[in-house]
Length: 465
Image (cartoon, rainbow, N blue to C red; front, top):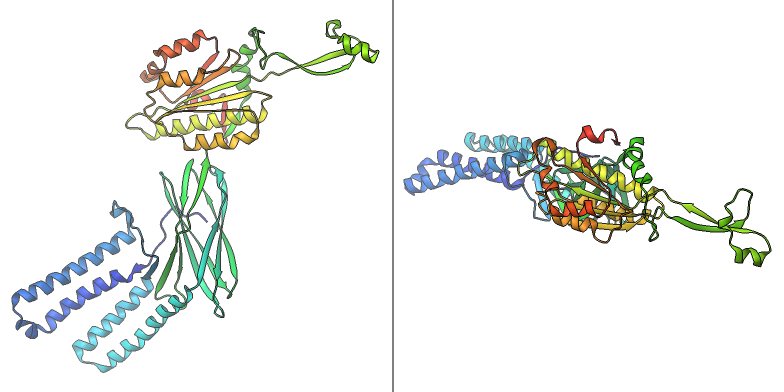
């Protein structure tokens, strides 16, 4: 189960000890004022200052833990063994503290007896949690890749190496972190028998493309009374790459962008995707073109045989992604980047899975210029989606290098599609049209289509799922 808000955590014992020690020092200075008078006023000031420091430090750490937004630096738990006091345990300690202070101030043995009776279960709870966490192991199993907004199941396996004692009410907390968000998930194990293991699952939906880091895993328990929480941190790291969202290309896509190119006469000087390709030899049928008769085979088989050709209508594609992001981007600017990447991913899916003997080249221009190239087929699709998942938008200043890399080694039978996040209405297109390399592209005869990554322009060509 996915949780976008940080779950409530127990307060570490160090925080409780700091606050209680500070309060205890204040009470001690006031209660035994005559005794401390022999040490001088300076000693009393030092004790009072130390008490105030302990109280304020404990309150600050508790506030940061309960409200992480108050601190710019995230709270990190570096120790493998952790111990804390949940809210219920904190109230329990507060009552114990009141009873203890009351027994000292009122010199009441009855209050001290009640305090001692309450201290027993608290100590017992801490010992049981320590025993339960011994000889435990946690593992995680997850897919290495998924699509954005796809429901992913993660398996958590909890194993016990104890000889005779079962483990009860264990919680495994997992962290999922990316550059844009941090998520928390938890699964509960009711019982794990000795020398056995149990598996539990949680589901998550990762809404942003990119690389997510998982871990570490934290095993915690409050069994049996819920007064003390102990934890054990396992350095079990994991990674999952979230591919961008994809959609469907509309009927206008091929009709508007490729129909005119198909009607253009292509030079026959070398084989290409628009040349007639030899398919097979077959028997002559009435109406066949006599020029297609293969005379040598016909003479050998003593019957007319003709050459059969087939023609592919798919073009090799050069897809250029100009992921421009201004220095101070707005949410709309970031949305245009994600729309452009989703549009590009959909085109690549169509080209690689539906194309026949075609090539695909993808050039991205954001923080840096990168190129990816492969022939059609599903085997290369995963690596391409990895590239689109991890690409970062930026200043996109290397426009000339982008054009040069896109046209390197290409022929005129390719079609270039340039998808840009620049805004035409504010003059950002000037960075694309004034480059000398752009003029070279036009001279090479490669047809190029320029698309602005806006919902208005892409709505007729592409529907996001």
